[in-house]
Length: 427
Image 1 (tube, helix red, strand yellow):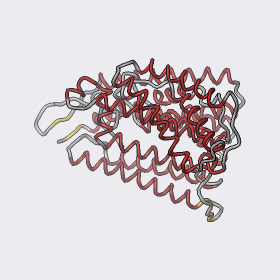
Image 2 (cartoon, helix red, strand yellow):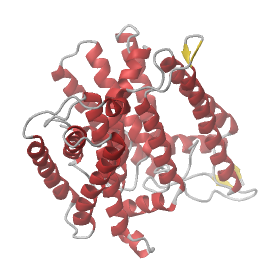
Image 3 (cartoon, rainbow, N blue to C red):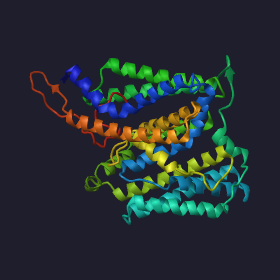
Image 4 (cartoon, one colour):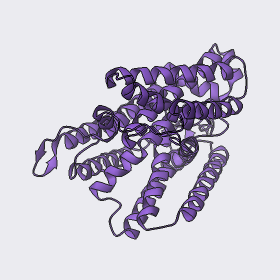
């Protein structure tokens, strides 16, 4: 099988524009605010604060991406964050339970909440918008009832460390050694995954990027990870919540890309009827997606409550909109079937960097809200534009020796494990 390099490169760019477009935008936003803030944005202290301030939104964005991929929405996550945080605070303070008991109990509570909402959506067939809107009201009211309209503070150190603690301090030449080692291990793992994916595509005679492109992508990825680790190593190292985020991103990326469960989620979102005809239990898949969202909401509630060192009636306000915005900015499609974990994380970081950068330059809240709204609108418009472009230019010129052009390129809404088209420059 031979290909025209120019045609293949063009197809690869088109197929990955939606996946990498926001990553490029994130880099541009970082550079812009680094200049506008006089270098304050990427100081070790501010980078650490960025991770901690956006950790709960990142957690919610991962779960929200799965919900949106199945073609649904969850408006209740902010209220669930508040409710599970309030119940956890009561268990810790009033009941005197240890954190090792409270954390799994809170996650179980989140799973039960997700199961309750998933039952109505998956089996009773009530629209998710209505079910989760009701959940938003119910659990916000339950939070007020549990707390009696008052805050509970302070909380045990063990819970605060979960949200604000750091890896053990081992310094070498003034740098946090565990963070550098984790960064090197992470960079090596990502590069290995990229080349393993390329080897698999070659083995199955699938279109792949030229070797030079893969080398460049691997080098840039490894460099970004190591620079990030070096910046953190100059302060207190990687926060514990940062380690939790790395584990969640890696785990969910693997599940969505490389497991049957992940493929089922994409299949249900792409076409529930077709998925059912192919033997997938679509209702069960939808049900477990909402259970997963409940668990991640409870985890975000624990992190937020621990960082705030208090359970308050107003906790989690507007978190659902931040998570939804992160998923859409990261490339998820409102029609379902399209979206990636990494994309949702990039979308959450875009919003987080915007918030932080605008605060550092002293921009008012009114302008912050206006700019964030415009960014969300432009991001979705960019996604729609690229979707149309991929659809129009999807024909891949693949010419066998002595033959004529054949085959068609990837469809824009192909529910593949990557959530993008079938042509990839890397994982």
